[in-house]
Image (tube, rainbow, N blue to C red; front, side, top):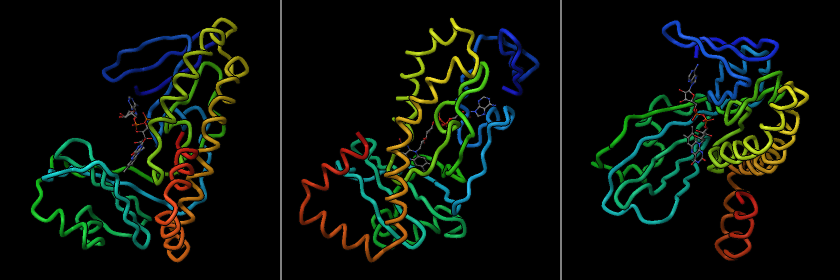
Length: 241
Ligand SMILES: Cc1cc2nc3c(=O)[nH]c(=O)nc-3n(C[C@H](O)[C@H](O)[C@H](O)COP(=O)(O)OP(=O)(O)OC[C@H]3O[C@@H](n4cnc5c(N)ncnc54)[C@H](O)[C@@H]3O)c2cc1C
């Protein structure tokens, strides 16, 4: 999609190659940098240290069944089983932490040694800055969904469930909103639904980000979690639902 224009009773979108399409409402799920959010004047600047993410998939003899999180200074590594013999290896890091996937891996010598010689099934793909905000999720005949609606960080491994949950909410309320005219006012229930889901995500993400920047406190909490795994599991379940 190249452009969109909101008319009185519909939205007209310009597509690549000169084609066009019209609809009663535009649901923009065009990611962190959402061009639609910017065009609609819904962009809100974020004042936070810039964080970025990059990932590859590695072939390993046994992927296991646990997600590993390794903390470093200004960078974390995540190893996630995605198949019996494949893991996702992702890094989330602050600007300036390192310049490449290999350099980031080098910040975690034990992990680098384990992956030494492993074949990578995918190239490095990255995204960022991760924290993005919108002034609102709705405007006349327009809805922002997923990262386009606002995002903080992937440190808690969230983003997809937030987007899918909001899509379910939107599907339920959209017929009524369309029948009323799909103005920003008619779509206001989506803003409320988004806030209900985004609030807990944002609170937990800010907490984990704060911990990731305080190594002493983080180590004490992890030691505590190892001693009392049940309360820790309950806290994680409450955080991610
Ligand atoms: C390193 C990393 C690790 C992550 N790990 C997790 C995790 O473990 N679990 C989790 O739930 N989330 C994770 N996330 C977050 C998750 O990836 C996002 O929250 C999720 O992908 C958001 O989906 P989306 O559809 O909103 O945006 P995207 O997945 O970014 O999709 C947007 C799409 O819109 C397309 N697009 C953009 N502009 C246009 C245009 N003009 N016309 C047509 N198409 C367009 C893009 O090409 C893209 O395909 C991670 C993120 C990163 C960076």
